[in-house]
Length: 575
Image (tube, rainbow, N blue to C red; front, top):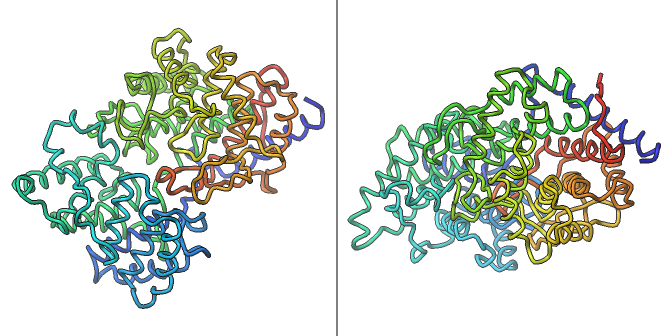
């Protein structure tokens, strides 16, 4: 690495570390601004209108005004304020405005429906679950009819969980809620009608069990959008007032002064794990402030089982010590913890790490892959996921697993067999093909498979996707709102680290341009600007995470400098 590039990267790393340590809280965590959600706001105002119309009238009115002001110039809405238009938030927001203020919202709703018609109407919804969700909101607003729609078999929940857990996975709560709405507006007939009462009871029991595992009463997944959907379903089912009031209380407690609701409760843990690993890779693994961050991460480890997912204790979720245990988030936290070494943090830290690694191993699919919530699920939005599988391989290797470990071997076999025809890999919870392809290259590089034909195809596909300025973006995903001509720090960092891991030398001009691009994208405050690369609803609603981008940038620059020096970074110091 030339002296000029070395100096630029050194300065970039130190500026970022100083900025991040200055933002760190006393407990070791970092604050992460939660994006304002179009879906959460639209769902919340409809739910409060149905469940708490008098007391929450002012909240509904403010939410309606916020939604109208958040409409994009093309007539649609993105998943979060200012994001490119996507079909699901457009349908939900337009339906909410028409339901709650039809006269004043006539023109915004017309613009939205015209846009949807130009995009193919309901045919644009390729996910059956989201198509039903969109149709439900249109029906609630009087803009559609769900009679004749495919029936949601709520009686499925009357069976033992082993018959439905893998099929429903994390969609248990919205499955129940949408079934309640459908039963209210399109009552079952014949034999299904005889089962409706016990099926309703089974649905309420499932919701109650999900809710018992949450951090806050009335919170489902720590997501205001999902809480709103459940609240609407409870109203349609005539559920006990206590259940409805808890959901209402949750929504009322989360409203912002401007009338909006945010996307999710717990982004601190996800982003903080990326920051902790990024700083470690950048040379700060032994810094006492990073040790404090690892203690905080360990304190968020779950010590109770989550029965609805059949998940044992030992994992992590995005909300903290309780909530939905998530394989991707757990792998991210473990990645930060193993960076300090297996004994990092003393015996308590070592035991927490061992429990977490065992938990991750226990969540592997029978085929060798990893999903996100429930092993061996048949739900496409959960898994199996190439990105999560590759990251789990890296984490387990960092934690001491051998390349010859049977679980590692099965995971690699699965990755080798599930490459797309164009050489790329998907990531279910990050947009486009750059993250998944990059992470697969990390796994191949770490296990001596960089020369395998599959790895070579992935490497060439990733190199071919590099933009002229040295960056990477989402590529040609075909998803509305994605700009294939513009690179992002996140996707460039993923790609740079993946290419280095699979053996592309640091002095390759393409990699030098990528590293230089990341450094040039650093802002005057020492941090990097986040882009909408995180999935809220797969391929339909993205969001921005303000911490992940900085962790990824530091990981990539750390990997680049280590590769250029043919060794790990020396210990760094930030003021």
